[in-house]
Image 1: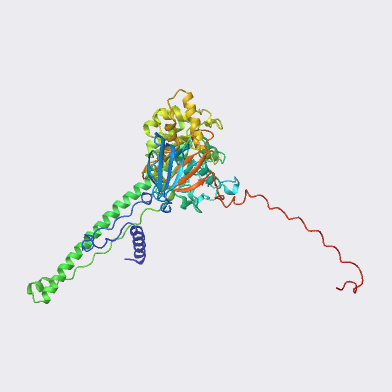
Image 2: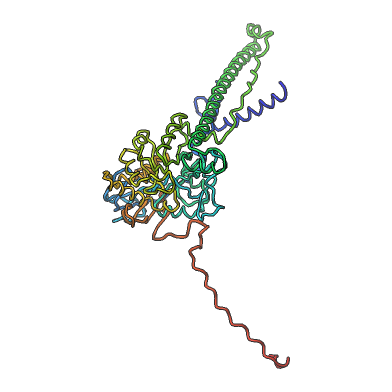
Length: 553
C-alpha cells in the first residue's frame, strides 16, 4: 500500500476511534462478557445531533436546599385545579409534599405563613430576548440577530447571552422562574434557542435548564423579506421565504441520509472485521493446541500441522470517514427527527397554514407558533395538530401583519381545546405575565366564553412548560417536580398582585420585603445616593510680615 493510503487509513481510524470512544464503555468487572474471548463489533457512533439533548447540557448545579413549608395559602396547582387552603413543602430542590390543609413541617424547616396569600408554580416565558438584547439598549449589546444570511441555523442564542442583564432579576421579581431565550426574527431560520432557569449565575451555561431540549427559531411573513429585500437579495417575498426554508430542510434531509448510509456501511464493515478476527483467533487457538500436543509426543497432531503455515491475521479494513460536520444542517436534522423543537414567529393565519404545509412536506413538526395574532382563525386545525399558540393578550396593529389581532385570541384558542400560552417578547412585559393572562381571561369572558382562572393559570405555567419540553420538571405544583414556587401577596389575576417570595430549585431567589443587592454588577451602586462632598477648609492665613528675627519662635 502506498504511504498516502496508509496515512489516509490512519487518519480515518483515528477519527473513528475518537468518535467511538464515548459510546463504547468497557465491560465492568463481573460482567458476563468481561472475560469473554468473543469478538463483538465496535458500536458505530451516531449522528452528532442524536446524542445530546442540548448543546449546553450538563451545566446545572446540584441543589441541596433546606426544607421550607409554605402553608395557609390558596394554591393554583397549574394543572387547572385550585386548593382553597393548602401547603407546599420544598426540600432538596424538589416539591416533597403538596395538598390541602397546613401540612406537617419537618424538623428544622422554615415555615412561611402564607395565610391570605396565593401560591403558584413559577411562571414560564417561552419567548424572550433578555440577555441577547439586554438592557441598556445600545448597539454594543445587540447580539440577537445574525442578519448576514437568511438561514443561520448553526448559531446559538446561548453563545450571545449576557447573564449580567439587569432584566433577569426583574423577571424573577415578576414571578418568572424559567424562560426560553431565542434569536431574533430577522432570518428565515435564526438559530438555536436555549431554556434557562433564572438563578443568579456568572455564565449562561450555569443557568441552563439541564435536560431541556434546544429549540430552533424560524420566522415567516414580513420580517425576513423586509430585512433581505432591503439588501437587494432573497427573500423579498413570502414565496421566497417558504422556498428558502424548504431548501434548507431538504438539504438537512440529505445529511440524514448520508449519515444513515455511512452508519449502515460502517456497521457492516465492523461486523465483517469482527467475524474475520474471530475466525483467525479460532484457527490460531487450534494451531496452538496442535503444537502443544505435538510437543507432548502426539504424532497425529504433528502430522496435522506439518508443512502448514500459521494462520495469518486479517488485514485491517479501511474505514470511510463519516460525513463532514455541518452545524447548520445538523441543527435542522435535529428538528426533522424531533430532537430539537421548532418555534415559528408567525402572525397571519395564511402564513401559519403555509408553514404547516411545509412541515408536512419536509417532516418538521411545529411545536408552537409565536405571536400568532390570527391563530383564532385556524384554532381548530392548530388544536387538532397539537400546535401551541404563544401570544400576547392585546398587542396588535404595530405592522400590517399584526392588524387583525383581537384580544379574544387566547380565549378562543383555549375554547377550541388548543394549547394557549402567554408570552412576553419584552423585557418589560415579562414582569407581568400574570396580568397579561388576566387580560386574556377577561376578554374571553366578555365574549361569552366559559373560562376559569384556574384554566387561565395554565397559560403561564403548565402549557409553556410543555412548549419547552420540560413539563416533567416544572409547570405544576406536584410531588417530585422542581421546587419553583411563587408566593403572591394578592390573587395573581389582580392588577395589584406582586410576587412576595420566589423560590427556584427550593432556594429563595427573591424576597420583595428584602430585595438585597442587585444581581447585575452593571447596576451595582446605581441606586446609591451620591457621596456628599466635605465643606472646603478656609484658606490658610498668610504668615505675618516682619523681620526674620520677629518670625522666630
